[in-house]
Length: 509
Ligand SMILES: [Zn+2]
Image (tube, rainbow, N blue to C red; front, side, top):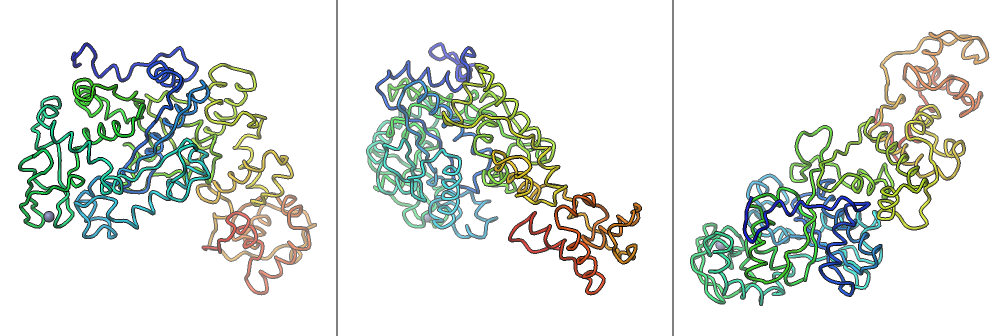
């Protein structure tokens, strides 16, 4: 542990657990530091190297929860979403992704279409989550009075937004290097004027110019275009914190350990900027059950908010992120058991809210509106069972459970369609034998006849009970479907059940 100025990095993990929710602790610290008049700025930042996944979202979720806690405590606050698209495209990534061919070493924002698509999707997801204001445009831009800002660093750097601070850092490179324990030349990297690639070698730092060598194109030159001189990550972060007056920022715990960015930059704030380091909200990993490591979008295959929003309401998603302490790791999975368990935990939580339990009420105040319905809901396991036995007929199940359950029934159907083990999908390749009396459904049936009936109607070995099928489709339609199969080998009811399970989807076989 560092002992500089009497505080070590472990201090970053300090929490006052007497608050009813951890977000209140960080909010309280911000209020004490800045007083009640200041509009607190909370940054959430990420680089668009791949689709943003449920791991990236923890950064924004933590920012949002502190923002809500501040508002509840009467403090004005604003979320600044920064897309760090002035970060370079790693060469390995440039080689792997066909869309990035030829872009290796250049800033992510230079691959404009790809970068825009990734960022816009995240903005759209945050709007659906109720986090980004609906008034924002597709790029997340909205007047500041809405409590939200979106920044694109590629655009801001190239527009010269940070040039005065970049010059200040160039002038102070000697001292900054001593504070960070680095050679001053390693504190900056230049995007080559000639070929646009980073990874240049900085040879000499001047007060307003930098001499560099580019191994990509062979240029050896001195540039006065300070906007191309990007401070190394830790320094870049302090630059933007200073420029935007950022007061608070969530950070993955790997950025908060000894020797990490958050640890090392403390000296910069103390000795050079003479300002507070923002209040850091350190957070743990989001894991997926099929995954032993952390979720990574650049590896592909990570769950995204879009995947979650198909099968869960926003407040349940926020509950999953707000329930564990931010310092803890947690797991998200859309497999059956964890999916049903997430709903069950949420239902228990709402029961605690109704009972006025202190911690549940505090969390609810952060994730839902004042007038949000907290009434009891049918359990997700029960809803899934009803959908299976009612041939995925959403309207019928809603009629059974009442209109308040409509959203849950639709999410259950979406989960079954994407992730569930559905009886209609368990087809067997077998020509069914004859049914008794040519399909007379009033006869007394044996097990074997039932099997034959399901094979005939659906191509499966089992399904909902016959009385349920009769109730859903009517006796005549069942008899007709049996005849159609005998005459033409078609299964109209199978088509109908599949279109109820996956509307707009043909029978994929
Ligand atoms: Zn070059």
